[in-house]
Image (tube, rainbow over all chains, first blue to last red; front, side, top):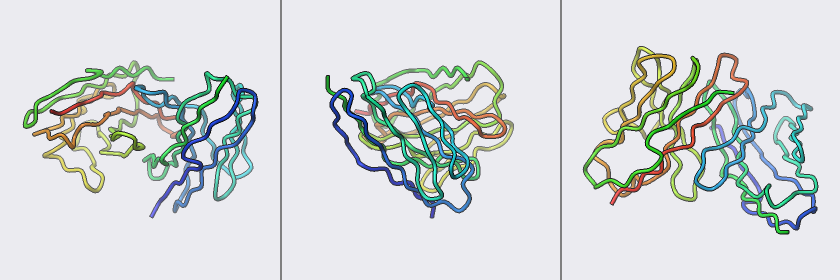
Length: 108
Length: 114
């Protein structure tokens, strides 16, 4: 059965304190791994898609990496506006299967 | 990116009634999906909306409860039928294009059933 697990569930950081969020997955045929940001009361905002092990993508303070079993979302020198829930999802047979998300709080 | 408009953005409904949620995209898309996000939970796929044919439902979701229409490549509706408080959730429309390189979401419909 396809499964996506994110850790930690919640993360509190001080402004400027870099860290990483983890997304581990088991899927029969990975067609892509997606990262989203979700603010309270809003729909998920697309961040990245990764397709193969070793691939990396960056956007501002965020960098996503992918291995054969997991993905990391690295946050460098976060700011309070980076506070949100970060969702990871795998694409298989046209469907996105989501993890439970990591809620990030960055304190000034 | 695709611009997705969902209506209504929120509603409070009486149990036993039905609500139809609309999803409009600013360009033609291959794939349209409907997701549910229960309070404090992640997203669960309800069904794939197929243009010109019946929707494909995931395990645990049935057409009588969640009828879906997709009359063209830019529009779909999801109806939540005979609602109960357990249906209180955020319902999200998602779209993708051929090649699956990106998948975008609408802002969601926050439904409260009382």
